[in-house]
Image (cartoon, rainbow, N blue to C red; front, side, top):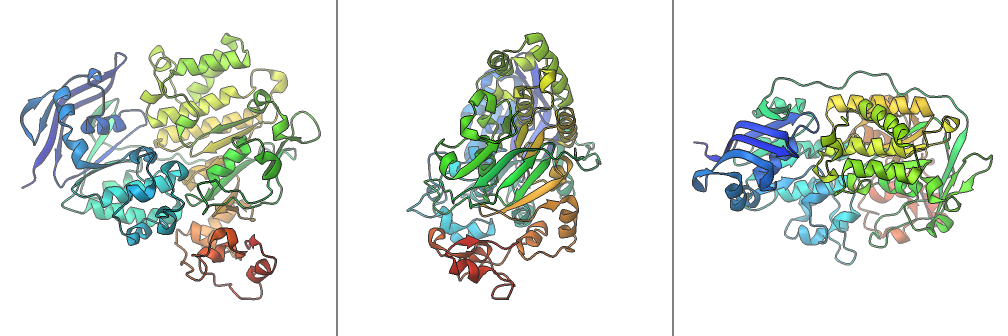
Length: 564
């Protein structure tokens, strides 16, 4: 007979006098599987935090809790003090880096886990278990943090309750299939109690689960949700004007990541009105590449390792380092994968808006006009409650939309004379944590902003259905190397249908979600002394030693390269 773990009745949660969640009756039973869906900002993640006892007691106005370890009714304060679920649950938070200890190495946090387990989660144990060059959560990509969190949850001892909040949001195409298989196995394990929060509910709803939906801030039984609206690809503005020139001059590595390099690239020109999508596996260097473009590294690196030149109102390119920060950031904006990189967590939305008005010396009425217009496009209501809410109290979906709104408003869009001034918007997993309705709003807002101001876009996303809606050209990254092929939407379709023919097998393998076969001959060779084809260092290649293979030429030149 199944045993009740926790029962919650008549739960009412308020922030700033406004209801954020109401639960009439919910019972968590051992061995059962629970699927929780709903729109962004409705309270799904908040409900998980309530179960774990992580919310401040002042926010819970009322609620009765019944716990297996206490044979009497409790209020939330008593339930929080018991911390029963927090101690007996393995948790994967939506922002997976928060599931890991920020100041402990991955090697220390995964102590006791066998190396074979790393491979089943698409993780290289030689990198993460390296004691001489320890890797910390802050050194990992979002996808790597998510896979490590999942691995720790699956193999945690004495943790038969697993709570997962959007566990696949940062997982790339190649890693997704084996990770989904692992989650499916958890969903059929009779000894595990699973709480899964996701927007991708269709694939899990067919399993034997209890399906709940958070609608209008109330937890209720599921009654159907919307999916993506069908849209045409992002239109091209057909402009020939270049606005930026990018180049990596020599290999770049972070001091703590001897295993990772950004490899040299040829000169890349960004045209006004173009939308470029960067795709590839987690940890391949996509976010690092965006940070390089945004000017977030030390100034001396832009004189030695990187070249980022901007074409402002003159006919000649100006080196990035010679442009004042104020002028630079009215021209270029980055929306980080981690919203805390863009926003100040303990400040309200109003404080962020006031800072923009002050820094840019804008008439407040003019600013509010633009703010209200673009907030409406993104589905953000500008009432007093929202304006006075701290960033840390927003749902991840709401914080992500606000990050994009803030980026729009920091561009110089207030003077009609500068309407078509060159602008570059950098988006790192901007749709992460959003439901279908809000993704549709996001896509329409980005398209309208691009059409209105002729901006250029470079975007990263593991969700190819999303990135196809905001981009019309694509580049693939592999182990820190920007692959040479310029891909179109038709090229991606051909790769998915296995009708394309490229020398480099990675294009087909990535789009087909097939993991390449590890090359034992070269994979253990230190990257700093390796010469040859970069793909061959890690994976077997059917073209190796054929006449068209460039590997030996790279070896003779004592350099690293990659075929196209």
